[in-house]
Length: 104
Length: 275
Image 1 (cartoon, rainbow over the protein chains, first blue to last red):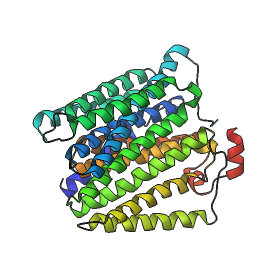
Image 2 (image 1 turned 90 degrees about the horizontal axis):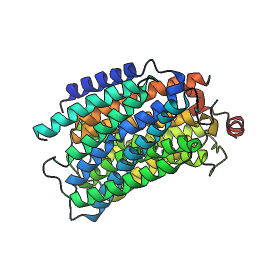
Image 3 (image 1 turned 180 degrees about the horizontal axis):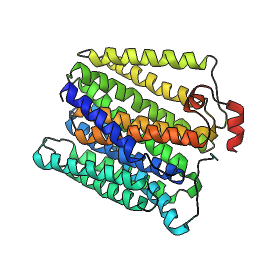
Image 4 (image 1 turned 180 degrees about the vertical axis):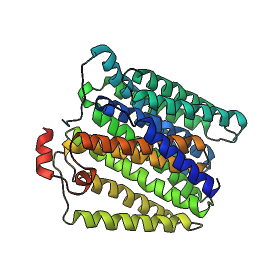
C-alpha cells in the first residue's frame, strides 16, 4: 500500500475509534473492553492468510502458522462468548451491576 | 485478493464499527456484539475463498481446536473470573499477531522499509500484549500474588525496549535474517511484556488489561499493513484508538492517571487492596 494512503487510513481509523466510543457510560467500560477484545479477534483472518501462504514443506512455518490460527480463533471465540455473557446480565438483572475486576 | 472477498471484508469492517458503536450504549449493547459476531463468522468463512491458500486442512483444525477450547472455557468460567478471561483471550490475539510477524520473518518476504518497520512494531506490541496478558491473567487468577518490582525498573524497561526495537529493525531490514536473531528478538519482546506488567498490582489490572487490549488492536492493525488486508488495518486501529480512550476513561474512573499505574505503582497498597 502506498505510504501516504496508509497514513490517511491510519488517521481516519484512529479518529473513528475515538469517536465511536466517546460517550460510553462507566457501567459499560468492562463489557466494551471485552467487546473490542472480540473485534480484534479478526486477527484470525490475518493468521489464516499467513498460514495459507506458508511453505507446506517447512515444518517451522507450519507450526508457527498453526499456533497463530489457534490463538486467533481462541481470541475470537472466547471474546465473543465472554462479552455475550457479560451483556446478558444487563438484560436479565436490570440494575445488577456486576462490574468486576477487583477495581472499585 | 478477488473482488468477492474484498467486498465482503469491506462490509465486515462496517459491521464491526457499527457493532462497537452499538456496544457503547446500554440499550443497544447486546445487538452490537451479535452484529460483530455475525461479521466475524462471515470474515472467517470468506477467507477460505482467498486465492492460492495452502494448508487448508491444518487451518480448519486450528480454528476448530482454538475456537472450541476458548468457547468451552468462556462458557464454563465463573462470572467473577471474567476479567482474567478477557486478559487471556486478548493475549492470544496478541500472540496471533506476533505469530503472523514470525511467519513473515521466517519466510524472508521482501517488504518496503515502511512495511518492515510496521511489521517489527507489530511483532513487539503483539508479543508484549501476549506475555503481559499472561502475567495479568496469573495475577487475577491468584497464581501470582506479589507485585514484583525490579530495582531500576524504569531504566530496565527503557533499555529493554530500545534493544528489542534495535534488534527487530536489524532483522526486519536484513534480506536473510538468521533464525537465532529472530528467536532472540521474540524472547526479548516477550520478556518486555513480563517486565512491564510484573510490578503492577491486582487492583490496577483492569486498566492494564484495557491498555494491552489497545496494544493488541494496534498490532493487528500493523499486521493489516504487512499482509495488505485493509479490513485488519481498520478494525485493528479502531480498536487501538478506542482502547486507548477506554483506558483513559477507566483510569479516570479510578482517580489514577495512567502514567502512575504503569511507571510508579503503589506496589504494596495496590496488592492488598485487590484482596
